[in-house]
Length: 481
Ligand SMILES: [Zn+2]
Image (cartoon, rainbow, N blue to C red):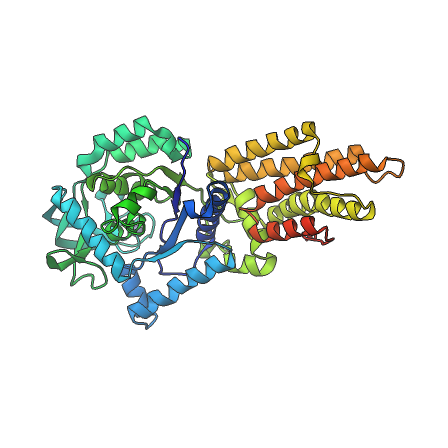
C-alpha cells in the first residue's frame, strides 16, 4: 500500500545521562527516513517526533545525587538532547517531553480508556524491583540474586499496584504478527517477538506515590502513580492527537517506530497490547536498529574504555561525516563496531574520491570548455535510463527503510558516473564541441540525482553541492581526511 502520509518516531531517551552514540544512531536514522519521505511525499505529509522520557525513580534519585531539583534536572538533560539534535541536523517536527502538562492529561485519558475496556485491575504484588531497569525482575532472570544487566541486588517491594491485562491480547497480537511479519525489521526478529508475545504476562503499571514521588497520578487514585513505561509509551499517539483530535490521529496513525535492541518487548508487545486495548491499529513498522559496539567489537562500557562519544566525534570530524558513517557504514539493523578507520576510509572513498571528485571534474570541465550543462531536456535517453535504474533501486531501498543499502546504491551511481567520464574523456581537445557538451550535460544530470539521493544523509553538503552544480562554482566540498 502506497502511503500518502508518514508519521515516524524515535523512542524517547531516558534523561538520566548525556546522549550516547546509540541515541545518535537512532536519531539520525529517523531523520534520514523522514527527510527521504519529505522529498517523496511533500514536507507537510511527514511528521517526525522525538523527545525525552522524564519520569521514574532513576531520574528522581539521579537529580538528588546531582543536588538538583527534579524539574531543573530534567530541563537540563532534555536541553542536551535538543542541542544534540541541532548539532546532528536532526530536523524534528515535535520534541515531546513527558513532564509536560499536556502529556499528563493525555496519558491519564489513555489509562481511563484501558480501564473502561476492562483491562486494568488492582492486586497485591511482591517482587524484586531493579531501579536500573525500572521494572520488576522475575526469579528466573536473577543471576546470583542480582539483576543480570545491572549487577545489583534488586529492591524487594510489597505493594498493591494496578495491572494491565496484557495476556488478554496474546492471540490478537500473534495473529497480527502472523499476518504482517514485514511490520518488523529485521525480519530475523519476528520469531523472537512471537515468543515474547506468547509468554506475555499481565504487567504492573503503577507504583505507590510514597515510593515514587516523581510520576503521573493514576486517575481517581492519588496514592498511585504511573509506571514510567506506561506513561512514556503513550507519547507516540498523544503527540498526534490521542484523546484530543481524533481526525488528526486517524490521519497519522499507524506510524513507523524506531528503537534499539533492548526494546523489542516494550515496543513489540507491551505497547502493541496497549494500542489494542484502546482500539487503535498496531504500529505500521517497528524498526529495531542494531547496537553500536566499541571499536573492539564489544559492548561499549566505561570499564572497558571503549566508549565513543558522539560529541567528541562531531568535534573531530563534523556532524555530516559522523552522520554519513552512522548511516552508511554502520549496519542499519545489525550490530556494528564503530571504527574511526572505517569512518575515514569510507568518507575518503565514497565522498571525497567518488562523488566529490566527479562533481569537481564536471564543474571544472564545463567551465573550461564553456559548454552548457544542467539541461535536462538534452540528456541522452539511454544514459538517463541507466541513471534512473540506479536511482529507482536506491529509492526502493530507502522507501523500505534500508538506509545503508540505499546509500551504497547512490555510491554505485557516482561510480558509474566516474567510469563514464573516464571512458568518454570529455577533456580531449579533438572532441567536437557538441560531443563534449553532451557528455558533461549527461553527467550534470547524474550528479543532480546523486545529490538528491544523498540529501537525507548529508543534508547540508547536498545543499552546497546542488548550489555549486547549478552555479558551476568550483569548490572542494569533501577534502580528504
Ligand atoms: Zn537491572
